[in-house]
Image 1 (cartoon, rainbow, N blue to C red):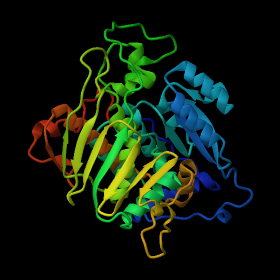
Image 2 (image 1 turned 120 degrees about the horizontal axis):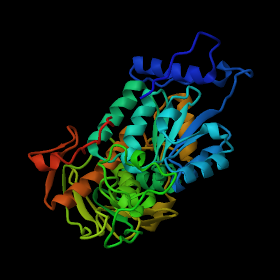
Image 3 (image 1 turned 60 degrees about the vertical axis):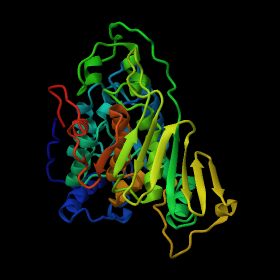
Image 4 (image 1 turned 180 degrees about the horizontal axis):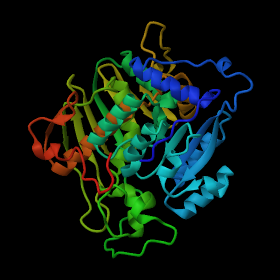
Amino acid sequence: MTSVRPRKARSISRREFLKGSSVAATAVAFAPIIVPSSVFGASAPSNRITIGSIGVGEMGTGDMKGFKGNPNAEIVAVCDVDAGHREEARKVAGLDPKSSYNDFRELLARADIDAVVVATPDHWHVPISIAAVRAGKDVYCEKPLTLTIAEGRALVDEVRRYGRILQTGSQQRSSDNFRFACELVRNGRIGKVHTVRVGIPGNNRTCEPTWTPEPAPEGFDYDLWLGPALWAPYHRQRCHYEFRFILDYSGGQPTNWGAHHLDIAQWGLGMDSSGPAEITGNGEFPTSGLFTTATKVYFEATYANGVKLICQTGGSNTRFEGADGWVDVSRGDLKTQPESLKKEITGPDEIHLYQSRDHKQNFLDCIKSRKDPIASAETGHRSATLCHLGNIAMLLGRKLKWDPAKECFIGDSAANSMLARSVRAPWRL
């Protein structure tokens, strides 16, 4: 990857100060550094955080618009291997053609960019995020954070090594409903938790039963789109949104919606730095066409404390069940039993979970303070790991023992071989 050449000595800008602060944070075991705005003064070149957007399809453009509308941020570059997406995003951002890139490495080489948004297909999330932190950028990476468990640990290690800020796009953590639901659970309002039920939607795309290779559209850099994934002939159902139903690039709905609702399950159980001890699954998979992810999902995970988590197709929610009641939370809705739990107040001496009411603003605030965001690299990795464990269990069709500390399967070489994927040369982490 292209490295950023050091600048000649001159008066320090706010942007350089923040990057220097992150290096200092690394030297003191990542102690948070709060930078008061008075340090920069009224004559500072800019108090806005400059952002480059990498991957500007539907979700990426939505993220870009969210940051563009924030007075604390400025979109200064866009990147996509699809010229049509790239040009449309460039116009929305109001940029000149020189700030529009096909290759993410050219964007990362710009010394005037503080942070990047990574909203590419999943198989590119970790390689681009690692390249970004090595280039001195903070990262907002869409969910699921990773394609594999092994690359997730590699990303967490690099984020810590370089002292960067990484926010995973699991934005439900920045919703009052989800935080309150998890506080009810963590503070014992439903008694001892015994079961968590997670519902995820079914596939929202239909796989064509047969396919033949097609020429890649003009203006679409298919080779770079594939990147580290194994080479395969182009077909329209392989790329853009439908990539998520092909195991080479994603994990289907378990890593799509699972990265939201399983993330809340981990939060409510206090497992942000851990995971289950056992997992078993029984899914249904396509028998023809390009799609290879499960069309019907069912897996069970059991934690060391005996709590059982069940994830299956149907619904879109997380439900915690305890000895004295239950809490069921989804987007825009919170149900409890007893119903009076909805009116409970978290006391001053009880567990108060990380509060963020705006996921993107939280990321920007943490760039300035150098504190961990609400969905940090470790958190995103652990939530994605639960999704991947479910897929591995369904693919193998047998009970698996998992060591969440060592992040490996116990006594199962076949399962351990699925912790990582082959990477196509010349790409590497």
